[in-house]
Image (cartoon, rainbow, N blue to C red; front, top):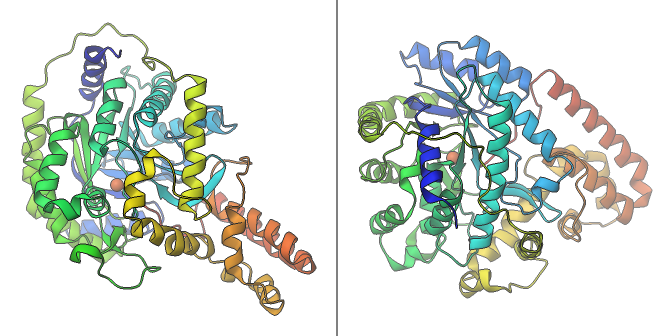
Length: 496
Ligand SMILES: [Fe+2]
């Protein structure tokens, strides 16, 4: 059994090292240009209380830190697939953790925010976040992996005053479906009982949980939020995110079942007013006692819209956020704790990890349309499978063919040659998911597309091999050069 008291006290001790930040922005260095954004805000007399910066090159993050000495910075990581039972044995895990700690240090960030989601599982790769299996074993594995990452931060990320950044786990969005055997709030409670991490509650993600579970047919949004917050470990929420929602371009009409729009997480889109109503409900909840920051997540959004939305959010919420943070600080007690290194309470055994890996292999096959919808964690999803069907038949093909690099634009000559031979590009989707693949590098969807497309053409149109090889070489070279100067040519839209 976990030592609940110790875990909670360890969290309190770490939390007390994080001063209240206020109302800020979660941003990308390049999209839109961060320096231009901050200048435009300054022209309007606005200065964010803090900026949470998404993973970029270490050089770019260092430049941000040097250029904005007066703004506190936090870090939004990416690419540590802590939901995965085999992540710690990945050949790139140590390297990815090392890079993450370097970037935390270069920003002087007080926390690492990381999504409780993945883009790779059991040898299958996706372009955008996929939620974890909501099961008790999955929660144990996440906690175990977080403990390992927190250990690395404690060792390598410790600052002059002896404190280290805190791992914050963000509840991910649902993109049309969810799979699991336990309610989502229960899943996060299990994690927080095992490991002293903080949490990030994203209001738009919470809306998608209402929309893509049975809750939207059972009850009103307000009642759902109330019930959810009562169950969720709200006392661990350190940061709140709020961002845009919109219908995906691969999906036809704006309306779905129950008259609710089929919105998904979309940072470029405006923040709908219903999310501000939900934010008010969250801020008013008595269990929200560890809050340090609220950020509008605005990567990929036009600068003018960001300035307008930030001005409005400050006008409506800045004081309320200050009051909520102060309310929590008033009840915090100094924690006496004999320092002991963090560790998983009971490391997950190898056979359980293997069992979960098999569950994730089945997960990847189901959501890519390659396998039947079977297994206890899919019972509820299978009963109402329209959301899953939408993901399989529209969202995933769009992701593989167009998102993060459109195949027609990346490989114009090869695509022409394939068309002349009557080979349809859509055949690339089942090829991509045909079998699990060993990892050959840290996750990079653009480079993965190049690698797989070369294999696809080698198999289905060997006559076009020279042509596709030339296009692959050109793309890899341009991508490496763009990354070196710290300005990736591919402005990768993302969901966080
Ligand atoms: Fe978020």
